[in-house]
Length: 262
Ligand SMILES: O=C(O)CCC(=O)C(=O)O
Ligand SMILES: [Fe+2]
Image 1 (cartoon, helix red, strand yellow):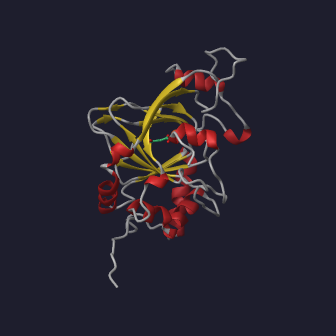
Image 2: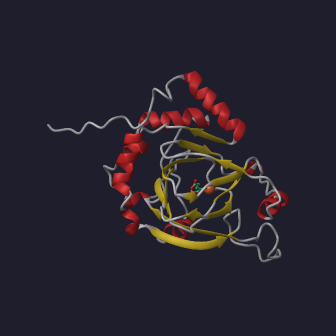
Image 3: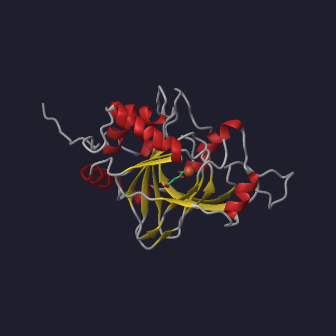
């Protein structure tokens, strides 16, 4: 029987994710900074394989431009427009949803790889990791052509796992302010949100290049992606997981993100 042997996607010599002390050190870095970048986590060959499969698919991308508040919720008409709950920022991006990614795509091999999932559990300090129960959310590829950006926001999910596939010539940089709030305590952090939107707070830049694994606590950190500059489209993979089974995005969220619900 013919079989295709593909080289492992993860550089385990550089990132020994089965070494308990290495994983503990990663977890400590994530906890201390709210973000963790593992340089060269994916091999250059794996990144090339993924780009070869998805890089030409800009024609399949769903593009949406919108304005939203930093909490990604509808505005509150009882509050003034300039209240931090209602202040609007602009986002424009394109994406390919999970059901547009082939069953045998190299990206899915990574997503499904039990060792990859075990590494994430170790670094995040969770016991279980599950894909989304809907057909669109688990693996997404974001495309940001020139001028497209992601406005300041807090994520809904407790953690984000991403890998940049292609960096633009300039711009397309992740800026953040860590620990703006404890979302689990219901904190809204209105004063700090106002300060960041008003350009009155120092922001940090998270530097990463194609193949790096990026983990980020985006529910607590206010963050944005600056506009792509130049003619090279920024491409980034989002690996979305949950720490519980059977979690699906609500239909309204599916419509907003993907322009469809199935
Ligand atoms: O593109 C990135 O680097 C981050 C994306 C992000 O913040 C999001 O999808 O919520
Ligand atoms: Fe985000």
